[in-house]
Length: 162
Image 1 (cartoon, rainbow, N blue to C red):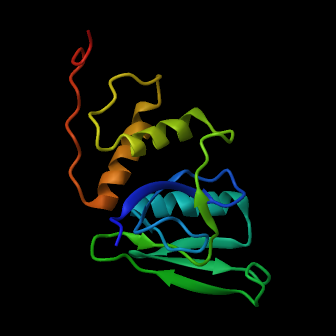
Image 2: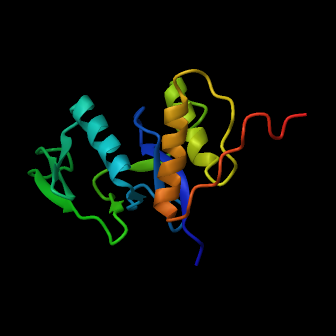
């Protein structure tokens, strides 16, 4: 069995995300990646902004997805997603996932978050444009929360230069 990996994913044919998702294998369209609560909230925010026929809301620690008639070719319905023992949410069959494509247009904030996820096991990058450090740090924290690994110490300013 392949070790689970944190991947940058999005909902197919959207500009959503990127989201840091933990997957045990290569991503399939309707697989159920694991997300942190913050990642699940990001998904909810994107769904509410877009009014795509699928919405979600928190019910305590669980998130309830609700879809309108026609969203899945049926009469509509709801599905609750409960956190696992580590507080991660398996969000799957309601959304067609795909890997986040760096080549598509994206914002500087999306790029900073993605870089943070990708560089989660490396020393913290000492240089980022103003206002993007928090998104980079959020990406690193998401990746660490998903894998349950501690954060790598920051590189002090000036170290590694020369």
